[in-house]
Image (cartoon, rainbow, N blue to C red; front, side, top):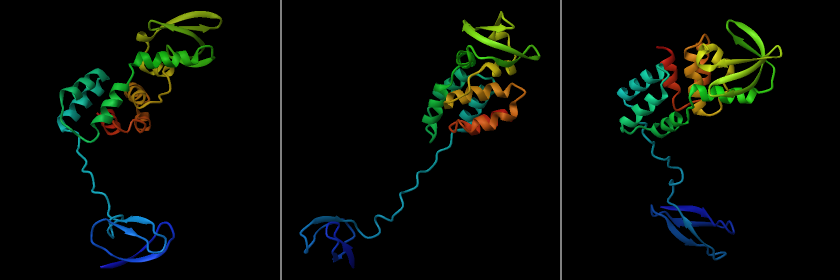
Amino acid sequence: MKRIVQCPQCEAKLSVFDLGKPISQKCPKCGNTFDIAPEGAADAPPAPVAEVAMPKALRDALVVALKAGDVEAARASLEADPAPFTARKAVQEALADAPTVDRLIEAGVRAKIGRALSIPYKGQVREMIPRGITNGVISVEVYARTHEIVIADLPIDEKLAFAAEPKTEGEHLTYCLMLMGSSRKNEVPKFAGKCPALKDLIVATAGK
């Protein structure tokens, strides 16, 4: 079957036979040699890549681990089940990137050092200025007096007040796990959206 093609150099129109395979054509007008793909080759859509879902047993194990706030257990469950699935690498990277709660709080405190803040503490909103953090103990100034706050002693809502605003997928995962145990559980879907590899698992876990 003949078809009309155009020389890419001089734009002359040529009549050529379509042989169903790529051919090399010399333009009789300018002498340029160029390749011609079979008709329809450029329009053919790429073959769809089949999505492979996460195995149910692994999904259930991850939900249990995340419900307990245990990212290490979630990582171990993923490592123990080598079954391939489409999002495996993305899930692995998000879990590997997730900091501990204490690390997220430490980052938040360091970012707020020297700033006057209104922080819920012992049932009241108090004005305080973070001065530093060492070994899980936050040093704050309240009314010109220094106080120490032990992170481990704080309820989860107060930990959230000190935590850093999440930026990476892993930080969003840790933040969501904190939200699940707090009075702000309804905010989980909003932050889960920033962790696409684990979004469905996070929302499912929050609903348990």
